[in-house]
Picture 1 (spheres, helix red, strand yellow):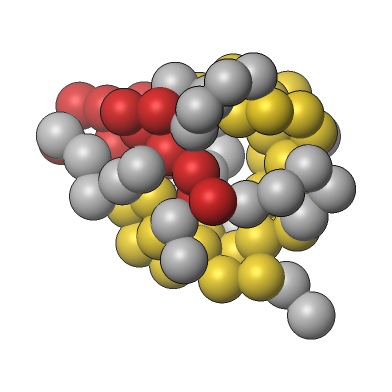
Picture 2 (tube, rainbow, N blue to C red):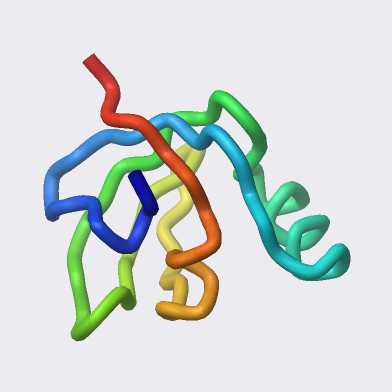
Amino acid sequence: MLLKDAAVGDTCIVQEIRLPFQMERRLEALGMTKNTPVFVVNRKGRGILIIKVRGTRFALGCNITKNIEVRRSV
Protein backbone atom coordinates (compact mmCIF):
# COMPACT_ATOMS: atom_id res chain seq x y z
CA MET A 1 0.00 0.00 0.00
CA LEU A 2 1.18 3.55 -0.63
CA LEU A 3 1.23 6.20 2.09
CA LYS A 4 -1.13 8.37 0.03
CA ASP A 5 -3.83 5.69 0.50
CA ALA A 6 -3.66 5.67 4.31
CA ALA A 7 -6.69 6.94 6.23
CA VAL A 8 -6.73 9.44 9.09
CA GLY A 9 -5.90 7.63 12.31
CA ASP A 10 -3.96 4.82 10.62
CA THR A 11 -0.56 3.80 11.91
CA CYS A 12 1.60 2.47 9.11
CA ILE A 13 5.09 0.98 8.98
CA VAL A 14 7.44 2.31 6.29
CA GLN A 15 8.54 -0.48 3.94
CA GLU A 16 10.31 1.37 1.12
CA ILE A 17 10.98 4.96 0.08
CA ARG A 18 11.40 5.54 -3.67
CA LEU A 19 12.42 9.19 -3.98
CA PRO A 20 15.39 11.11 -5.38
CA PHE A 21 18.52 10.64 -3.26
CA GLN A 22 18.51 14.07 -1.56
CA MET A 23 14.80 13.94 -0.71
CA GLU A 24 15.15 10.42 0.69
CA ARG A 25 18.10 11.51 2.85
CA ARG A 26 16.10 14.50 4.13
CA LEU A 27 13.24 12.23 5.22
CA GLU A 28 15.74 9.94 6.91
CA ALA A 29 17.19 12.95 8.75
CA LEU A 30 13.66 13.74 9.97
CA GLY A 31 13.38 10.19 11.31
CA MET A 32 11.47 8.42 8.55
CA THR A 33 13.47 5.24 7.93
CA LYS A 34 12.48 1.67 7.09
CA ASN A 35 10.34 -0.04 9.73
CA THR A 36 9.44 3.29 11.36
CA PRO A 37 5.82 3.75 12.45
CA VAL A 38 4.03 6.70 10.84
CA PHE A 39 0.73 8.00 12.27
CA VAL A 40 -1.62 9.80 9.85
CA VAL A 41 -2.94 12.88 11.67
CA ASN A 42 -4.93 14.52 8.87
CA ARG A 43 -5.52 14.62 5.13
CA LYS A 44 -5.50 17.81 3.09
CA GLY A 45 -6.75 17.08 -0.41
CA ARG A 46 -5.58 14.30 -2.69
CA GLY A 47 -2.51 12.62 -1.26
CA ILE A 48 -1.41 15.51 0.96
CA LEU A 49 -0.97 14.20 4.50
CA ILE A 50 -0.07 15.54 7.91
CA ILE A 51 1.82 12.76 9.66
CA LYS A 52 3.56 12.16 12.97
CA VAL A 53 6.93 10.42 12.93
CA ARG A 54 8.92 9.90 16.14
CA GLY A 55 6.93 12.62 17.93
CA THR A 56 7.26 15.24 15.18
CA ARG A 57 4.38 16.35 12.94
CA PHE A 58 4.96 17.45 9.37
CA ALA A 59 3.15 17.63 6.05
CA LEU A 60 4.03 15.67 2.93
CA GLY A 61 2.77 16.47 -0.55
CA CYS A 62 1.24 13.97 -2.94
CA ASN A 63 4.46 13.69 -4.99
CA ILE A 64 6.16 12.34 -1.87
CA THR A 65 3.36 10.20 -0.39
CA LYS A 66 2.82 8.33 -3.66
CA ASN A 67 6.44 7.14 -3.53
CA ILE A 68 6.46 5.76 0.02
CA GLU A 69 5.35 2.15 0.41
CA VAL A 70 3.88 1.21 3.79
CA ARG A 71 1.95 -1.56 5.51
CA ARG A 72 -0.71 -1.15 8.16
CA SER A 73 0.41 -1.73 11.70
CA VAL A 74 -1.39 -4.46 13.61
